[in-house]
Amino acid sequence: MDSLITAAARALAAGDPIGALKRVALRDDAPALALRGIAMAQLGDLVRAKALLRSAARAFSPREAVARARCVVAEAEIALVSRDLSWPAKALDAARETLEAHGDRVNAAHARYLEVRRLLLIGRLDEAETALAELDSAALPPALRTTHELVVAGVAVRRVRTKEARAALVRAERAARDARIPALTAEVETAFLVLNTPAARLISNADERLLLLEEVEALLASKTLIVDAIRHVVRDARTVVSLAGRPVLFALARALGEAWPGDAPRDTLIARAFGSQFTDESHRARLRVEVGRLRRKLRPLADVSATKRGFTLTPRGAREVVVLARPMEDEHASVLAFLGDGESWSSSALALALGASQRTVQRALDSLAAAGKVQAYGRGRARRWTTPPVPGFTTTLLLPAPLPID
Image 1 (cartoon, rainbow, N blue to C red):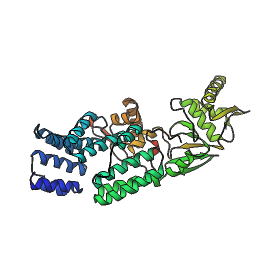
Image 2: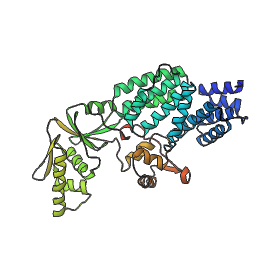
Image 3: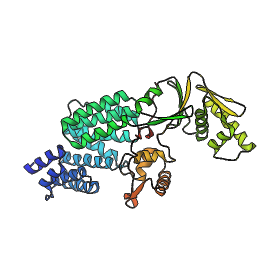
Image 4: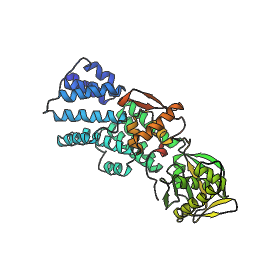
């Protein structure tokens, strides 16, 4: 490897893409193309970066398996940043195995972290934790140690374990300082904001207040019956009853939770559950049926009793009932949560992350675009959607992940 290629690689490792381009901008050999692609990625021109890396992979000879594998890993990172979640994971696995077989431990670890970050992004936390446990960050360079701790913090945040998340971010901050890469330092600072901005809204006795993630963790561990409008479950510290697939039952549970310790009138329950402003005997009969179903579902946690004007929720072991809601509620809040990370998403990537059909996501995006909440650019398969993050709020709890059961 000649001196210019070596100098460009060192500049990229130090987070200096401009310095790297000054050395290889006019060269079209395979190593230069690869370095130019990585430099363009660091500068944010992901389309050009992807094209350069593919050209580099084709330019390397079949005997240069390690160089080709590194190009694949770099392209996978671009796909992750550009939220191309349909990028073939098998290609990344093969590249990682090639790097491990040839002793390139650092780039192999980088490939593994890309896999874990993708799993984390789409809410597959168990798989992410399993893969993360197989990685030893102690001998890795500072930049990868920073990545490791950011992923650890990301898993902990989604598990609502704030002490673990904060400790990981402190370690990430220390590693980023050692790496001396401004972009990494900025990423750690952004991650800290998750712990210091409102993550949910508490509704109790007709009063509302915003909660930090640390306060949400304390609430989940308390002797409180929680009607969770973020995950669509009803739970206490030990038992979780999911109503995620039962929107009518959850609407009734939330209305009862907001009315506690009083009762919710029948007309209110009918309006919330069935969307009807007018009630007749058929609505009342249907309400009785749905309340009976809700009573059976909530039997481990609470009883639903009839009153003169409606129904009331009576917890069995909890001292009080509260509703946990999103900081800002919207019909398509889950879509907005993903777009709130500031990255551009395709509708197919959103569908994969949300576990919904692409057509459902597309309808949500069209509705949000009509309301001026999101914007699109590009056409056809290159079409991407984005929105600026809502200032002062974290969307962590809106992302798909199971709730902890202590």
